[in-house]
Image (tube, rainbow, N blue to C red; front, side, top):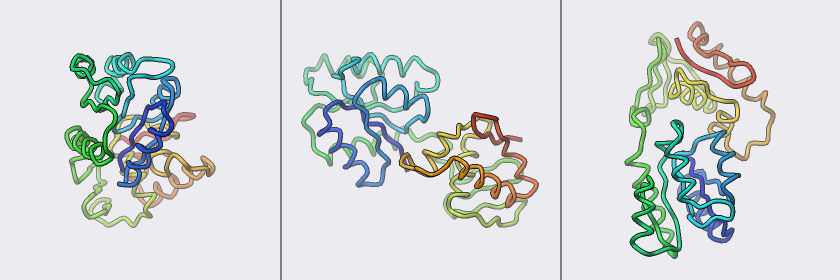
Length: 225
């Protein structure tokens, strides 16, 4: 499930966009200010950003330039959404690093079509890869199956999604917040120890390979050899 951030200060438009995206299976989260958006980006990077140009605390083009200047956010796809319709405005947006440009008003179907197209083009190599491998662990996304040293490992849905996230980000520390948001959802209201319990049972089920999942104290988890 792709995570999409909608940065739009007009609440009515923001609600239409987030509802439309959620209705076709995406996880959409809205922000009315640049400050709130930056805070979210520091926690969990989305798969795509819908960015309005006219915001109360910072211009959308300025935000886009900052995203492109940062190593961790430089490749996050961005669709500029604005009421400005002149050609020079569109050129400025695309020259600043936008992947696409939409002018208001626009139809919901056009929005969904543009989003799907950008996500297809920007799919990361690991997302296109159907089989993930790390040491003696093999995760087959098409079969939704995990094997360890050739033997099938029975996992619950959450354990499977947790393992997949850690394997996709192998060698990179994944924060607790990021894991909870991506595996349990942004509306998760349970206790963080839920994650610790799932990590414990996942390690047990992976047997010796469970040692590949390492705890980074007060930060999160990392999976590597």
